[in-house]
Length: 83
Image (tube, rainbow, N blue to C red; front, side, top):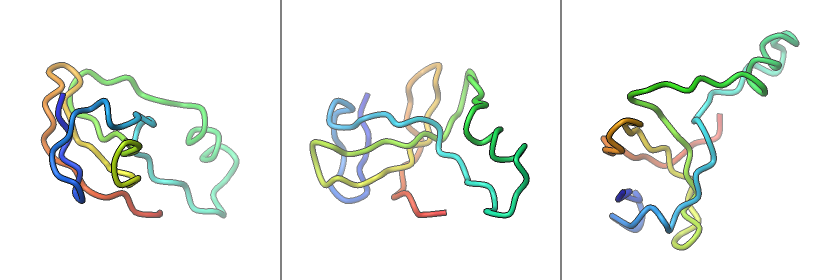
């Protein structure tokens, strides 16, 4: 699988470390249930996902990769932002 780093360009996936689904954090004032869901509950979809990858063997950027889990086809990449 090839991943296009927004800074370095297209690279082999072995330069990156997979860190999980790209999730949006709940509001700091959200109830305990929202935080429990954020920390412990994960989907395991077959199809398109947004994942967080770390470019360890390159520029050290955090990259959000939109890909299909069935075909491993990468449809888009973007730098991750703090949320």
